[in-house]
Image (cartoon, rainbow, N blue to C red; front, side, top):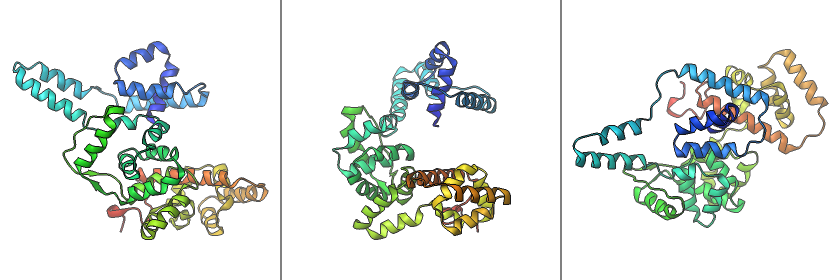
Length: 331
């Protein structure tokens, strides 16, 4: 769950009075994001509520101290200056910088709404916009768009490394009337690239990579190969060392692993069995033999879930995946 989803659940558990007081301390954007999740919740399982409240208690202890809104503090201090002319100029600069977060409104819109907003835009414009968004958000937006244009958009993201302030400005000018975005760019923006395409594809769900890479391959086979070589798949687990594999397997229960291994190669099964207890390996082998026909989509979904666990561990620097470590790779 995202932070906003957890906050929504926590506040629903706390009740209306407490939530109202909390909202008084939040920005309008934060309230909008949290309430979007609240209105979709009809039932909170007991286990989920306990976990969210427990995490809140842990976070509260680990982040003890004073929480302030630095931007509000700065504005009040500057406004209190005796030199009003200077104060007005400084406040203008502070407000300008505060609003200089490009395309932030799209970041809090529902994916299907963004997809609808962008459906008539040129693929290059869509690629630039998606390049400014969170990976998960970009993936959800892309999933809501016409399948026939996804590969073209992803190819353009892969080809995008930097974009001039003027181009970003033009895009925001075009969107400003509809979503009220105000921004200023005073430097080159790092946007797309192959690594971003890889991350978006990894968050789109099972099967998405095949059609996208096929589409990109028709335009630029070398680019498709580069993206493919940078992707991490479930079968790539076989290439990991024992210690890394053990770290990953500790995050996965036997039921998940059994389903994911249903279509796995013998080499991968052997690698995994060598890195779990003999008893666990026997149980999984028995379950696989006893398991009846399973939809391939269910197996692929579970494999994708495990891949996301692997990538999360890599992001947290708990493991290192060969070929993805870049300058920080171990030697």
